[in-house]
Image (cartoon, rainbow, N blue to C red; front, side, top):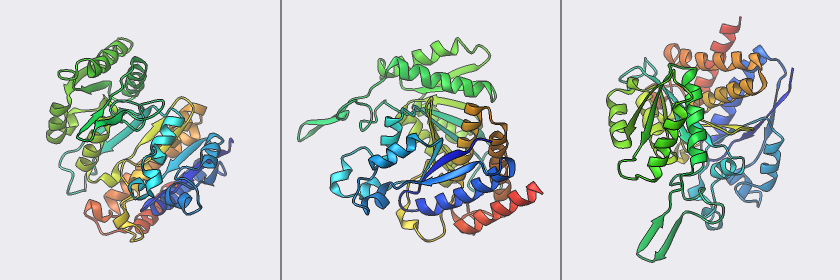
Length: 359
């Protein structure tokens, strides 16, 4: 059995707490299906690195990531970093750019027992992860945002056919393994060249997937429909900024942003990273919802299982997702979902459910 080296980067705020919870449940489920197959590698980022007199993303961390099979990244609080680091690309963005993690896969699934989730749905947002209007990562050198005059600020959006087509292909391949239905979200009626290229590229790729039903929506109409009828969507493919916004909205509709899972994937590497931030006001209080990062780790196991044709990791991924939702339905939920459990109490409940299911 292959030994998988998994980098664990706890990050800031609630990051260390939810990373520890994620490590515990991932270790438990993988041990059942593939004993002794995980090796965890702790790597500093954010304030942990700064306190060691290093930048938020040290070069040695980047070097060690190359030697690992997959990565789990906790949230970072880059707005609180010393001034000399605030103008730099944040750790997450820098890792995505350095390793060309072009696909950001963000599922959202409602929790039926949750009072905040009004409709049952299960969808996935596939977000282009490297360009668009994200000015801190869409240029080779410098940024896509600048001020030619003290009272004038400009932002440049970057849309390339290569990036549009490869994210579209990722989304259509995912749709083929789900319900063969995909929605293209854009704003080509106003931004006719940039979003027009995105829409054209998606339609071109769709010709290779005739079994997949395709529709498209303007972003404003899509957001309204997502609130009213989230079950109308299955796979959504969209651009960087729109995907970021829609995925947070979908997570809240599912019950809480704390449920927001995400995988950043390229052709060689992948990184589990919850969709939410570092929530510094909740740090150390044992109230953070760890499920988003746990579900992200499950997605990483699934990605590794496909890369290496490792059925044991696929089984572990399926079991982890099933157990998390089963626990939320039957054993309790964290405060953000309307429950009373703390971070460690929910973690312990998931571990107990895993052990009972494995007997």
